Amino acid sequence: MFIGIDVSKNTLDTAFGDQGEVVTHSNDEAGHDVLLSALQAVSPTLVVLEATGELESAVAARIAAAGIPVAVVNPRQVRDFAKAIGRLAKTDSVDAKVLARFAATIQPEARPLPDAHAMELEALIARRHQLVEMLAS
Image (tube, rainbow, N blue to C red; front, side, top):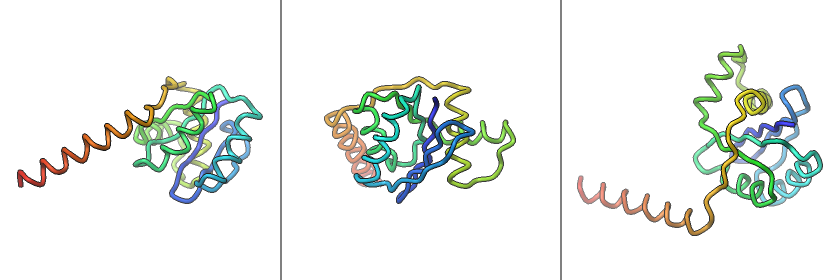
């Protein structure tokens, strides 16, 4: 089974297959716990989330740490895919189903997420780059 999760600041809309039901969980630790239990119960082939400017990081890390294959994909690719299959509506539940169908059709590679040290290093490098830009202008 391929799972699509539409991530927003407060909620996670999860489609269990592109024709399956969509369940909404809160995007916090308690919601992640409930979501993980549901995912472990169905043993998905792949879980796909869009990169949303770090809103997806915590839940993607939790899913990966549970040993469930997860891929964080470029939202533009998913939007282009949605247009190609004629899904022009843009709601959270539709997006979750499109993500599930994208996962089943494209089958993006599940990649291990960076560990805490790598993420900290990335944040430091990004901050250094910002400071250099500020000094140069």
